[in-house]
Length: 366
Image 1 (spheres, rainbow, N blue to C red):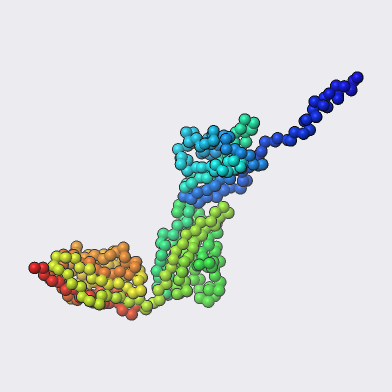
Image 2 (image 1 turned 45 degrees about the vertical axis):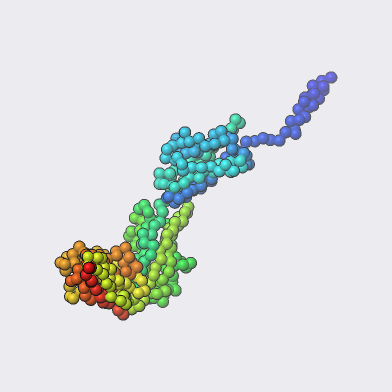
């Protein structure tokens, strides 16, 4: 008789052995910090393991006490979101159904750096994990194209967008696919051939974020695309510069084949340019007529004080086109006295032809 309760208990609980263990999933964030480049987008990983549909659950991302993103009732609730993050955060709707709670943060700024909390709340569980975001300034190349004459030195400018110490990171310069400089290691084959330190940095300025590279005694083979990269444990930042090397003696000043004819009172454009097209911004440019100085451009600016009085406020160059070799002169309010043979002269040009004449004919209107 004493065995009956035991038998009944076994019968009542027999189904207990058929029920699977329903342990709540874990919420997983990476243990290592995530790196991001300023102004770019970043993904902060966070997921449920094993996967579980979280699309109808409350998912929240916070930075300190600030709400970064709040997903509730199957949609994003921006009413509780900090203004700083408005319009910059998103979750993947498809990813949520598979337990992926990762946050996309766009247009990252330095203020976004810090510790983030990813959390999910259901009727039966409350899970959270943490992730660290490091934001680093971007690398910028102020000049996208540089032209240099063979034999000269040239500096390829590259810097951190926001001044920061770059001395503890890997600085790499590439020419095409070849690494020519990496943390004071040069292309040794070229170094031996040139018998000098043909590449150098500005080490005293690395702490301020100056990553510029100097190429000494430029050769024609130095022509091409260069990439400046700063590599840390978390991110790689790069920008590019295209270098055109012009052979000394190859350039020449070219004028028109025919005279320029304009009416009195009109504007005359006297054509003159370098062939092949190349930058003139560092050179002195002179326009003269009958020993009178019409227009002088020196040290990156016009010099009206050196100009003949009768041409004051009447002449100009096409300054935006000097980098493409355009030396053409614009002369306003033309008079009959302006007629003559004008000289377009580049005194320090390392070419075969440095001067050409342009004839201006002025006709009276009826």
